[in-house]
Amino acid sequence: MEGRFKMAYCALLMVLSVAYGCAPSATTKPGPSSSGAGSASAKSSDTVRSGGGQAGGTKESDATASSLKALQEGKPPITPASSPLKDVFFDFDRYDLSADARGILRGNAEWLKNNPSARVDVEGHCDERGTNDYNLALGAKRAQAAREYLVSLGIAPDRLSTTSYGEEIPVCQERSEGCWRQNRRARFVIVARRATS
Amino acid sequence: MKFFLLVVSLIFFGFDLDLAFAQFKGEIIGSGGQKFPIAVSPLRNIGSATADAGRFSTGIADSIVHDLELSGWFRVIDRSSYIESPQKSGITLGTFDLKDWSTLGAEGLVKGGFSVQGSEIVVELRLFDVYQGKERIAKRYTGGVSQFRRIAHKFVDEIINQFTGIPGVFNTQIAYVSNSGGRFKEIYYSHLDGSEKRQVTDNRTINLSPSWGVNGRTILYSSFQDRGQTLYLRDLPSGKDLRFNPPGAGRFLGGKLSPDGQMVVATYESGGNSNLYLLDRSGNVIRRLTEDAGIEVSPSWSPDGKQIVYVSDRSGSPQIFVLDMQSGKTRRVTYSGSYNTTPEWSPKGDRIVYTGRVGSKFAIFTVPLEGGEPRKLTSESFDSEDPTWSPDGRFIAFSSNRAGRYHLYVMQASGENQRRLTGSGGDDSKPSWSPRLVD
Image 1 (cartoon, each protein chain N blue to C red):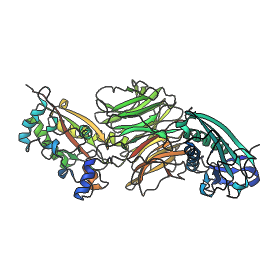
Image 2 (image 1 turned 120 degrees about the vertical axis):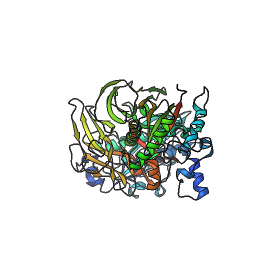
Image 3 (image 1 turned 120 degrees about the horizontal axis):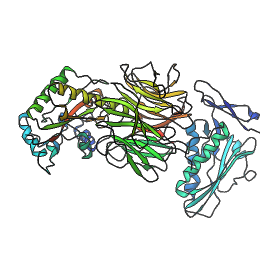
Image 4 (image 1 turned 30 degrees about the vertical axis):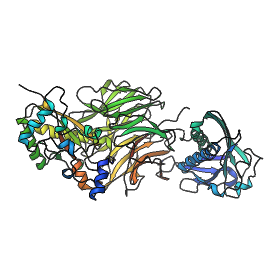
């Protein structure tokens, strides 16, 4: 249930755009969190590198911020369109991967292979329906399903952690299937890029 | 001599109460039938004049009215029709005219007085039987002026005791999750009428699933405040948190303190699998309770602490199961519906309340522990979730979006008399009803 914390950005968007609630993620991109993320996956490793590697370098905002961090900073937990690691989506109360989801994960795996120093936290999310407790467990299943598929594609398990936010940090606030499907997702947050050998 | 005759009828729930008022009338009044008509006079200031007199005079009466109406057993006669002047008439038998109340149809009457001395308030409250012209309860309370509403709750608990033989549950608190302070989810608690509201967490993250310890002095909750999600045990008097450090790389998603307060049953998730663990009250693992590759979540103790009711998806959809702690045997409780979650064991031990999916909505159900037909208590034209029993098992609090956002509601265990409790301005959810307060 719930999750309709009406962030200021959401309310603003509703007023300004007369959109039917929060617009989908592609159109609600706020400036700061996505501006530096590069445009194509080939380039993004450079831009991300500027964030993680150096001591004291805290420009994590160049990459996708964790949903909790986005919440704390008052930003929407949106994966920037320019992010090399794309979200995958799930059906209601399911955590099996669709053909579409597998296709997206193969793309994510490709990037991870090309950026072997990147470590990623896989976030599992749910829509607001059902109870908070169950959705925390379901989100964990979703994150794990995505992680296991990446591992099956050759990504080292120790590069992939998981976090479930259940239904607690939705990307879309509207009470409709169009919105719920955006919230039933796994997203991929680059947590560290070490200068590996 | 018993003036308020108790008739307990064990229909459906074993909780339905019929309030009978005295032998001489022979009327059966209560849930499903007529409610007991009662008047609650504003209190008389029997001390020296004080600027706050109006606030206490009507405030205490308002709280009494609130509780009586919330119980569902009383019809409180509207104050605007009262005849006598509360500041001029007496508050003991013979010092006011009973006819002023019988004329209005009142069969019961609450009158009282108060005096304020510095930061203390002394309140005297009486319950009269209007038709018999008898005094049934006379109580004197002393407390801090800021807690004057608690005195009203205590007195209503006495009134309920007079009628039913079991004290009411209005001197209790509800803990809940709210985002009313902004986009974060923090934990709060207050009395049922919203008074004496306290904020438990203020860490600007996500805090969930509060539940009370036996004495009402502790709250167990889960939080993302530090290094991933885990459980915290808050000691309310000191305000100190004890962090439960998860074993291994997983995390605690939620948990509940045992009825004796010595143990915790927790959901531990690792590698996508969530299972139940038995912990001591410092968060150390005593033993693992379930071994399943699926989802095991939302554990709740039986009143005797020997069994756990919880949710498992091992049958392909979330359903409610009972685990016997000693034998390790599990038994499925729900068979109808494809999504049954958040069970809580009734204080009497005979029923489970839970959230079930009906079409595209969620509703509150109860089901007998030994199986049988579930009973739907809330409408499927909106969502209702997260039920919690009152300590006497006669009421259920829950959250619902029937008024747009999620608010807390309370109803009788039969589903009757559903009333809203909170209106924080945000979404309020996950209520947990405290034990009766000692003070």
